[in-house]
Image 1 (cartoon, rainbow, N blue to C red):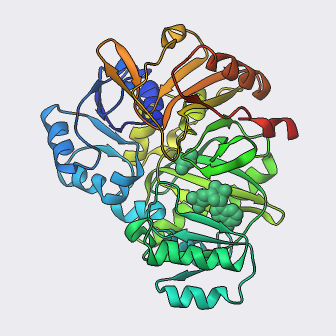
Image 2: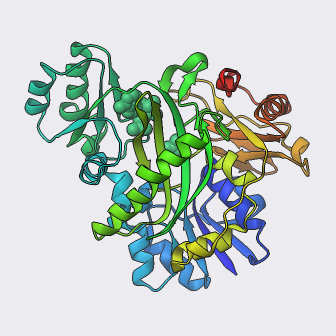
Length: 423
Ligand code: AMP
Ligand code: GLY
């Protein structure tokens, strides 16, 4: 069969790697893709938001299944455009992708269906938000309602910061219309875990757990980024936590979406906080995490095409999802300065060291070809994933592997997986 993947990051490279492993797949296209994805797929220069062009391409090439990696096209309704043309596509439609697209929606959903989450209020007017903040308990969390590249969340320690935050989001419109509405939420303390799942509208199958490192600098300092590294599984995701989430969060979310007339098909990514009062939902995403996919997919035993098709067809109950009994760590190599200003266009050296190196993966994010050379072309450049029999071995392998790759202004965190030592 022929598969089209929509996206261009490390996550889409990990998806392309998993799709390429399937015996059922003869040809992969990726729009727009990157220099690493080109190893598995023919990259076509159509942007992820060009829905009609993508659907026309899928018709012309007789694509059997399109997989959407990114949040923006999902929230924008790409799946609806494909469905209208009778094209098979993996991902939630617009009505369901609102689970990620509107934080106010997802908070109201959790409240209505008693899914554990931080207490909150939604505001559409800055005056009302400011009035609320006069007596609210600090610290407090402000969240832009819409998509903001993972940067629309402000943790405010003081009332002054919170007042400034409302101005930034709602008056200065730092994230555009994403800040027309905001969620003001109780600050929670605990460890974060990312849990990805496959969903077919009614059945949910949980993948192995992972943990991201969102801040740019060691010791969780610096600005929030898309993610500087991950490990999987999370030693803090215990059986007890799993049982609790199965009882109160996972199926409850799928059932809630169905009850709202918004059946969800695709990936639900649960961002969880393990608080003293038990696990609570921090946020939902409607797609694989990046760089969570880079540690979860290399450990998945199933043919991913079988799972994607079961989600599309509503037969996920027949899939026995299985993961290797090992661990993986991904260290992101970024351009120094990310997530703010950085230079790009530097040659990346050492990629050949990874050809046929079992248990190691270099997932490209911001890269591009320049003749035979591969150049840096973004903030997050590469994700180096290594497996190991346990987390410590995987971490040692991943950091050893980062030494094999070099480019000017290479930057990485040196403490990815430090939490493993506290487990
Ligand atoms: P989100 O995009 O909602 O996952 O938020 C980004 C990050 O902000 C999360 O990964 C947390 O580290 C932090 N965060 C979000 N909501 C809260 C909260 N209610 N309490 C504490 N930290 C939070
Ligand atoms: N790594 C977090 C995300 O993909 O949203």
